[in-house]
Image (cartoon, rainbow, N blue to C red; front, side, top):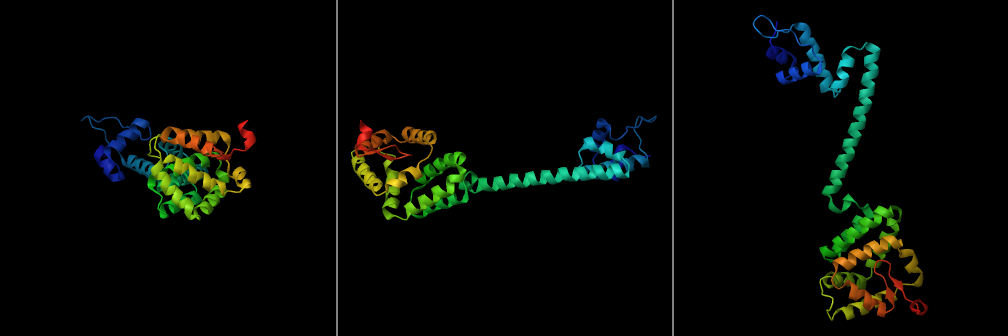
Length: 256
């Protein structure tokens, strides 16, 4: 006859585990002997080993009782079901690991590869990180609403970056966003932006546009986070352009 400590040692578990199995009803708890101790026989060791093997294999304790009393066919069916569940859990954990890896990768957390490559290209041409982060946050909003359009938008942005004047404009805007609303240099910036917009063909304005509700959201971020935003938009309107996310030419009839 064995003490609880000896039983645990034989089965390769802790005394605490034995007590837990008693509490859950998996392992019968023997009566105390005349000395006040609980004594276990060889059958208890066998039962405890079987419980430990099933638990170590990932079988929920709620299913262990069922398997201990199952015949061969019932046991095989139950094990197959448990195996399917474990494989599903493994896939889920692998997905979690992939998400954690994307989190560690920074931009890749919420953006497709083509957008990450575009942001890396911005960094490569010398665009300050503050502007890159602003672009990243804007594209996160876009991809949440229009994931299928991202390849088109990224191809368009890459083509724009091929133009040295666009790259220079990005670098300048990183400084502009810190200027106060009354900075006299804003007129020159508005002139440069309007000149850049003048080079775009008429058909480009429509295909580049985002849905109006998304454009309004992005414009609101620009207006609330950049001190000179409202004045810059007013200066652009004087030069024939309206909007920021969806920039549109103002035709003579539009002002009536």
